[in-house]
Amino acid sequence: MNDASEHKRPDNLSRVLKEWRADTSLPPGFQAAVWGRIDASKGREAVSQPLWHVLSAWFNQLVARPQLAVAYIVFFAMIGMTAGWAQGQKEVARVQDDLAQRYVQTLDPYQVPQR
Amino acid sequence: MKRHLILMCGLLACLLAYGGVYYASTKPARALEDRPQPELAWLKQEFNLSESEFKRISDLHEAYLPKCREMCMKINAKNSELRQLLESSTNVTGHVQAALNESARLRAQCQAQMLDHFFEVSRTMAPEQGKRYLTWVRAKTLQGNGGMNHGDETHHGSH
Image (cartoon, rainbow over all chains, first blue to last red; front, side, top):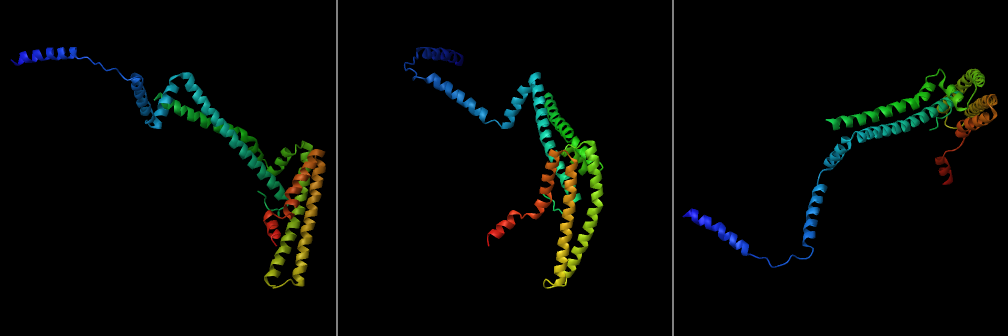
């Protein structure tokens, strides 16, 4: 008996569903709005990721290509060269000033060191 | 793993480049400091002295130093005497005035001797360099020593 009623239910349900008609139309721009909400939720997901994850993903993308990996290494080498040159110039200027002051002091020991 | 390796390579390249360029750019300056008389070596480089000019100036420098030391000893002795007089005086006595005068005379004699040396050195150099040397050394010694600093001028201006 249960088998028979269960067998009828799907048919009744199917019949009702087939008979059902939605006669209201979607509001204008409905689909665009839905897709817009979907895109917005994806954007929020990206913003909410930690900065470390974003940088890590970017770096992974970068080093995946050999040319970019080499360019990355060269870029860092150039930064090192620039910093080394700037610091070197500072040191050279300091040594020059120091030696000039020492020359003056050998001739005039009472000279107050000028800085 | 590959990512970490590339990251380390980048940082290593940065450090090596920094060290290499720093070492290369400071090598001449360090070589100058390692010379027996670095201040004279600096003078040679700064004023583009030829070997003969440098030799002559080095000789003048060596000849000047004993005279400078002698003057310094006299000035120190006079200053020491002045200090002792001032410790036992409550006003400017005749002795104090005499010591002050003698100290000033010795200092003026020292400065005249120094100027003489500067002129002689500048004559040894090429004319342009000699002029530049005189301007520089006067600014460093006499003019720098005798002028008031801004603090004093402000103070005097407020009277």
